[in-house]
Image 1: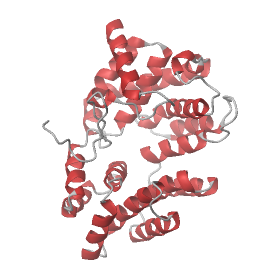
Image 2 (image 1 turned 60 degrees about the horizontal axis):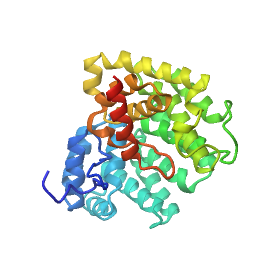
Image 3 (image 1 turned 90 degrees about the horizontal axis):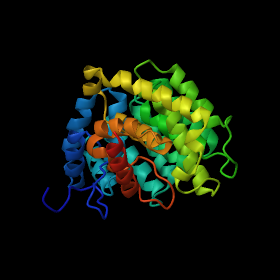
Length: 321
């Protein structure tokens, strides 16, 4: 691709890119158009998304993260004040602005509640409130926001990941506890979800997020390869269950073709866990399926270059396969 790189796609020193839009090429195109003020493209994309709540949440959060998204969402809302899509985009953009410390959390929450009233069935404004509550809210506010999302779409992918991260951040100064609430939450959510749900990987997400918190607190090594975290019996059990789910799901071409892009996030978590466990052949299979979005994990550890570490491990995995 000739320079300059597309808007919103951060580039690291190795020339590798990680695009939060993942495999959603329509979203990437519309995100770049929105940054240039073409909000009509966002209107068309969100109208086409309909009530595919997982995809809608993914698209709104990616569109809302842009530095100019608040301004263009406001312009859209001025043109179409009754549009719930314009209100939802403005809510997400305002929340991300507040999370970056450039706006009032109270104003962002009010904006999201306005969007929620305009579309009572849509979990996306409540997803935005959960994003905000993770950074600026209380535990009760996070739980209430998650419950509101789940009441509208009980298997909401992004909301479950966010809640796992929130819970993992409790008890920052304690050693890893097999009875920690994040593990109970992830197991409960995976058991409640349908058999083909990517929430089967949530227990792995819980282990990764908890390790991230412990490493930041200095209670686990910065390099997970030096830790026994992934070699415990509990970790091996949840990884086996998640990997079995992936093997079954991956052979279903229809499911793979229609899955929304955030499934790549699940596979990234699972691939990293397999690498840290030393299961190189299984990790190589996952990395091959992830494709270009294996250049960076959706989570990383303190003081580590995720792209560099990931590619070094990928070369080792492919060499061992």
